[in-house]
Image 1 (cartoon, rainbow, N blue to C red):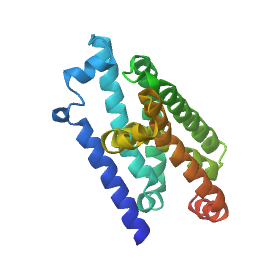
Image 2: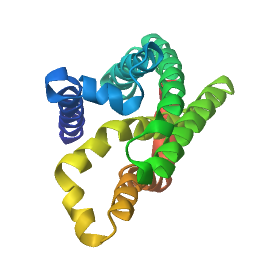
Image 3: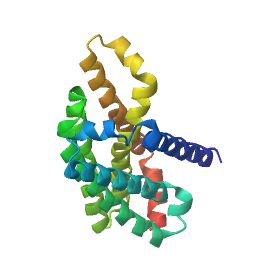
Image 4: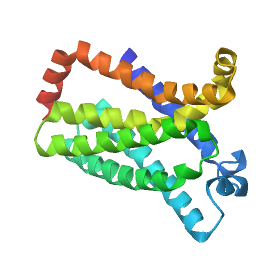
Length: 211
């Protein structure tokens, strides 16, 4: 029961903050935001719109992919949403590669390119492993890919509520931005893979039963 409650709280908090930052009145899709990503040409605006739309699909598909009650009961539906998740991830990653060179946080750019590339790598590996019928590795790569995808929401949690901590630890502002940026995706990846390694036998058995 506690696990189910924790999952529900996580998804509620994740989508609540995502929508909070997405809604135009909170200045995420305002003109100033569009100017941040380019010169407000039709191409820039189209790339930005495609990025937001594909990102919404990624996050909506993720809740269907990673909620055990849905995944374990509706295997066929799980596979279809998995394909949607992978396709929308490819689109979202492609738009990121176009947008990131013009990011307003120059200090964050190495971290942002790294997490975007890891997202792509995990997606490719997830697709490869499912084709090889290596279900456990596929599941591990899918979850790792979502950690990278979720970075683009969770980094805004740090920016909004915890940036003061990093500014107090690092006197150089650029260093504080870079470290906070890396912290957001690297720590969850490390914790997840450590958890997976410790519980590998149990997770392997549970996953194999589902497929």
